[in-house]
Length: 471
Ligand SMILES: Cc1cc2nc3c(=O)[nH]c(=O)nc-3n(C[C@H](O)[C@H](O)[C@H](O)COP(=O)(O)OP(=O)(O)OC[C@H]3O[C@@H](n4cnc5c(N)ncnc54)[C@H](O)[C@@H]3O)c2cc1C
Image 1 (cartoon, protein in one colour):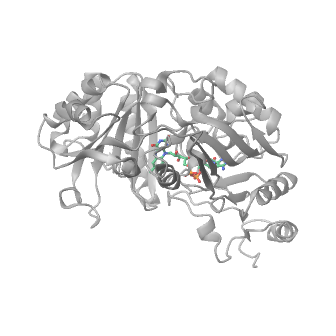
Image 2 (cartoon, protein in one colour):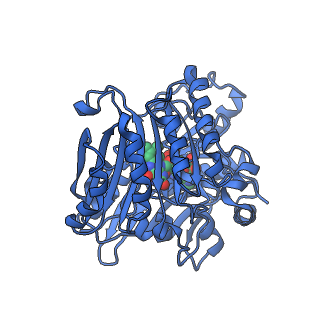
């Protein structure tokens, strides 16, 4: 191992590694070592993880050893399952890579699945489907289950009828800052159980959890792609149509400037499109009747809305699987009036100089508005729409892309719920201060989170995230 590549006290790190190595069953790597880059890789190539040490955990004991070690050496702990939401640089941190903790066990009788920390959604979707069941996954099946659930988790098929994924968690196994492995339920440690579901990685490293599955095997849905030039017509119909959908139906729209990739079908390759996403649970004939007003607006470039097995749920959004460099922003809207939509079209439409790859509006509502039986810390209940925008490009395009992202957020600000946003969609550039994060959660929820943080992580070991500062 070479210690010369550290940007700080290399000797100290070298000694620390020797000490930790006796306890770790998995990998223990430092910068410059083979495997270090892969172990620390991120989906957003603009946000590299560059930890002082990375532990590729082979089991729960490795997670405990890494946390105890980090806390004892006054280093923060960062967690990476898939790298889909890297928040900030981790040069001082001990990074725990959970991707080898990949057990999935379905209890079909009780409709519960136990998922370990490194599992991605596609594994749960496929395993559950063997028993005619489905989980509350999100749009991309490459995303990690635990990271998604710790931020609430809003998906493209089941969320409007079942609520956030976090509501259906029954038990969480978590290694807290003292290195203890706790089995947390609503009864055993109600405060921690509340905070973990919505408070993201602030309270410990989750090693496994159990959550409910639902008896769903298929849906009617997919995507309709319209020529970007026709987006205004479609979007104004979509706006009122979406508001009238039953809870069994879910929709979102994305203005996309697609790359000229060979894997995209011809009408979409390099095209400027409006992507209308739709899913309905129930007979296909009902779904077909529901989507008819959108099909009637104009002929789409591609109509991929049809009856699908639940295992094809990733086809609704078609999120890009490959890591790429990008900048992103999100906001929450309290209404989507004709005026709001005009502002959206003005900035993203054919007459604009929009350089962004995708600007998306998700319609929420339904069960996503209702308080769950066992409350959690998710702050977005009652918000009818969220916007997520992303521009693809490296640091040389940061000025252009971030400038345009800020412009969109400023233009939509009159209709936004100030500061409040979906935790899962916060980028590295957003909510970077405690003051901003307090706005995301709301003062009362943030106060409670900070109290619980003080009880379980008083030294703020878990601070490589959107950080809740101990009260
Ligand atoms: C293409 C794409 C599509 C998405 N679609 C949706 C969607 O439809 N709905 C939605 O709600 N969200 C969605 N998201 C957001 C996604 O839920 C978050 O990015 C989530 O944090 C990803 O978790 P991960 O484990 O994959 O990523 P990672 O980068 O590995 O982890 C992200 C963060 O989660 C925390 N974390 C992860 N694992 C643990 C653990 N075991 N213990 C403690 N903390 C942990 C850490 O704070 C970590 O920094 C999407 C993101 C992308 C990039």
